Length: 461
Image 1: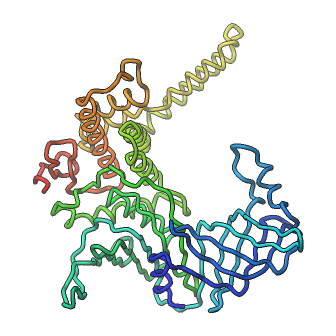
Image 2 (image 1 turned 135 degrees about the vertical axis):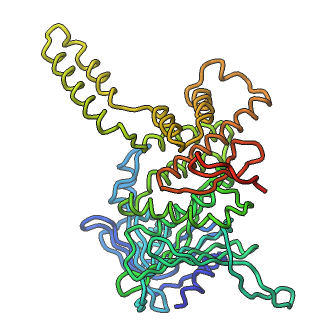
Image 3 (image 1 turned 120 degrees about the horizontal axis):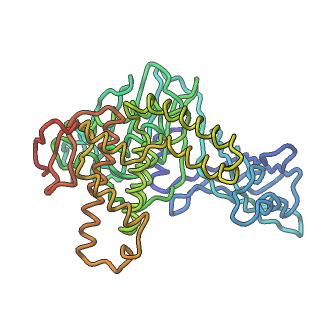
């Protein structure tokens, strides 16, 4: 099977895998088993589906699959044994697998025959193929603004022309190539390395692309080496806000974006790779993703999402005085808890008092922000914008709930932009970035230098 052709079929919505053998096994000991043949396809909205004409079944009776699903109750997640695993062999000999599937069977009670349909989050094909270096490639079925510096030949209206469509660079001991052609609706990122990639490295690449572009980029096809094989994973379209307003750290139209964009990507990738285990989200990337997704909705949701994300990022900051102060507070807390617990007169207040004493070890987001400001790591004047925005939208008073005037909306957007700058600046501090960034909180969006004790340099174009 030609992997590139299969990905292109998937991107164009034409994926159709005819399968000569398919099995479904319930995720429990002695669970239901179905065997048959038919296909794996995708719907018009990009969702992977399958269909099986069952020729053999075990431990299966009509509607039995509903027991586990209904057992969870309203508002509850399905238990593990409500899901099934799919293994399918195509007529070309490729084996495809998918997991955690909910079934939609159609039983014919007259002859006990059954047809099973269902949706797939993703499907994975595995191929025996020698690969000298370790490899991962991510296909995004959208165009993202990324810095490019190399050209390729193409044909347009019968004429051969050169187009700017790719870049090569190194990051995290890996060689990267990124490709995007205007009007293609497609962006591709690949990495090769002589050494094995950390677990979840493709997730880290996706997170770094999101940070660089300020968009909720989600890969749809993944190629990776695993041992002596190559795997191809195709993922269903995932829900996300259609248009986010979280600004990229560097304005894509600026020269600094072209010159320093991949430095930002590399720094973010190195940080998340070092600080994250397994395939889970990195906390910084996760909070930025939440802010980005909320920005694609109402201005109120945008304000709440940005405010909460900033508080979450601030909680990741370790102050110079944290360790020494923490030990001192810990000793004081123990002394106070022991005193109250040994005093018969205060037993009815002991539980409440303990809760209050335990809170002493928590530093506020403002503590972290003002410390960062003193260190030249965040813009001090923008902290008030975050405080005002948070109070109005996360903890509003009655007067904050009045019908807004047009001037209120402008103030909100201005404050949100400044909070967006703080989000980027905290991220710069965490990942160890030094260089240009776009200050969306200032008029005309100038390009400034980070850390802030360096002088602003240019105006954005």
